[in-house]
Length: 159
Image 1 (cartoon, rainbow, N blue to C red):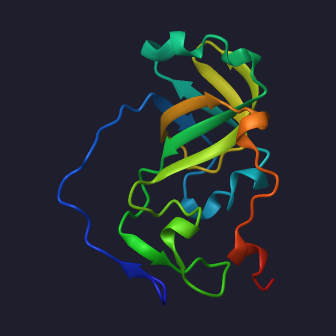
Image 2: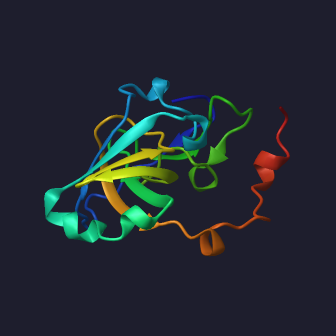
């Protein structure tokens, strides 16, 4: 743990379950090698969807961008306050995009390069090789983009 971080005990049991629908293949095997955010990389990655969900991909090839949800299965889950390396002061977990969170769900908007069966070639991921895939949704710029959104602490931070 870094100075200023706070960990809490986790609940003894889970409230819900989910199905991994596939795996993500990336060039990164260590967290320190991953880009800090998905927009920092132009690496082509592969989303491998489990064959049983192949029919769910119908029409996805018409999308230029997708919203990909994935489970950061190697992340800590007990920190409620974190001290990111690149910022001067600790922040609450829910004010950060860190993979360290009670439910390590990550989301990235990716550019779809191609579909080959149940394999999607994309650009715009920031996860470790083998990361479990939770969901894929079409990205709607008209609905999903909020041009005037602000994260106050980030906008006002010292650089």
